[in-house]
Every structure is written in structure tokens, then in C-alpha cells.
Length: 210
Picture 1 (cartoon, rainbow, N blue to C red):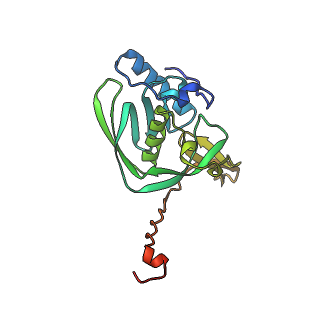
Picture 2 (tube, rainbow, N blue to C red; picture 1 turned 120 degrees about the vertical axis):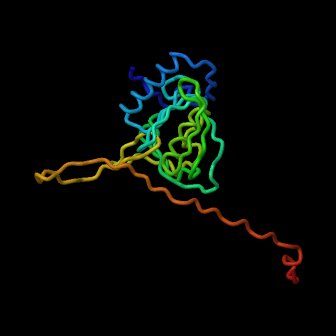
Picture 3 (tube, rainbow, N blue to C red; picture 1 turned 90 degrees about the horizontal axis):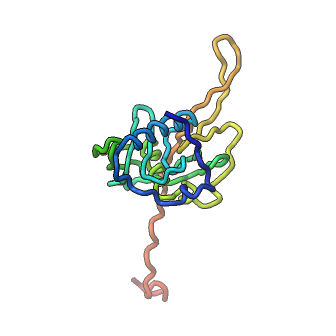
């Protein structure tokens, strides 16, 4: 395994639709191993191959008890429920995006690094991570989902990780010494969708009865 450089927005691979993998060989297995090591060292909870300059459809993601390496992932199903959350990206250092909309749950079809077909059902923040990483494979960044006024500088107590933001909090140890610890910020809220206005009929517009 080897640490790989994580590229920032200037790298063309980040805005290019990645190619499907057709051969499942030792190269793919080595790439996935490198991605695991690079992601964990960053640190992050997900990493897509274009972020390390490889324009192919491969990602790794790890959140709580979930641990997946996906090749040629495809979202088969998204929930109707949309949640808004704050996201960061290792390829866009220094800023985060608020109110990034993501489906609350997804079903993803993919292959593992050896070529075996698998399906992953994800909910909550893990679903957000997978959508964030699959976006990378299509040349899409989280900033494309929100208006410019929702993109802001990282605050002094925030730490960017891939697809998430951590906040540092003051703590006191048993011996009375002060220190800091980092906790992931996972505040999601439902997106409110305004009901479409009822059409105004000609009679109402003219002041007549409907």
C-alpha cells in the first residue's frame, strides 16, 4: 500500500466523467489498497479515484460499521425524502457547504475489487457519503448542489474531512488538564419543499366566482 496525493479542484480529473472499469486485476486491487490508506491518513470517510488523479469509477467509503470498496457504482434507488447537511471535501480545502441536499437513503449496485456484483443499502450519513463519492465519479462536487452563498470558510473550530465536518470541543481530562477533542458534525434536517401555488383561473383574475 502507498499514500497517494489528493488533488484539489484545479486537477482536470475532478471535473471529468470517470471511465468504467472493465478489467478486474491486480492493478485495481492495489489502487483500492492505496485508496484505503490515503483516505484514512487524510483523514476521511470516503475517497474517489479521481481525487488521486485516477479517472476510473472506483471509490472507498467507511462509516461506523460500514466498510465498502465499490467499482462501477450505480445508484439504483433514492428515497423521496431529502435531507440537508453540511459537507466538506478533501479536494476543496478551506471551505464547507451548508444545506447540501442528499437523498436520505440509497440502494447502490456495484462490483467489488475482484469483480463480484454487490448491492449496498445505505441510510443517513452513510448514504450522504456514498452520494458525495459517486458524484466525484461524474465530475460533480458538492458546491454544484448549492448556491454560492451556502459555501463558506471553515470556522476555527471545524476540521474538514471528506464528506463531513468535525468540530473541536474543549474537554477536561481526569487529571484536570484541559485539551481538545474532535467530534463529527452530522446535523441533517429535512428539506422543506414549497407546495406549488394553485393556478389562478381567468374568472378569479377578473374577480368573478369560480
